[in-house]
Image (cartoon, rainbow, N blue to C red):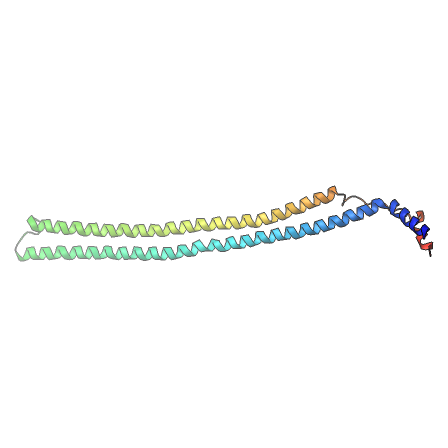
Length: 207
């Protein structure tokens, strides 16, 4: 029994470098597995953030479409109001001229002419106001669309950055763990084990 213990101790002592290397490799393997798990988690987190940003990118577009519809409807209302203003102006001027003709008055002079000019000015002003409002509403629709596209592009870029950041973080983790493993000697050649003739073979002769 004493010979067995002595032989085992001799073998362990002779192969201490190999045993140490095996222990280092095992420890490094655990670290690399942990690093791989961490890297995969980073990739998944980056992907999750990217998907979230991509979903948000469509929200401004949908909101903009609703705003564009409202703006176009508003522009239509103003155009119709402008048309009504012109029709009213013509109707009022025609009525003034009819009264002037009925009284044998010149519709272009005196108080009758002044009334005609007043109705013309008022009607034209009302019409141009509605035209300007219609143009503003149409421009608002364009501004809304442009702002929505800009916001969408920002979210899409954020998605790209999140996805890229996940992969870069995973790569950095892998490189860091690999470098630490290299420093620990995980990738160095293992020491050659001592021949069994040097001592461990004696273990087989102990009964």
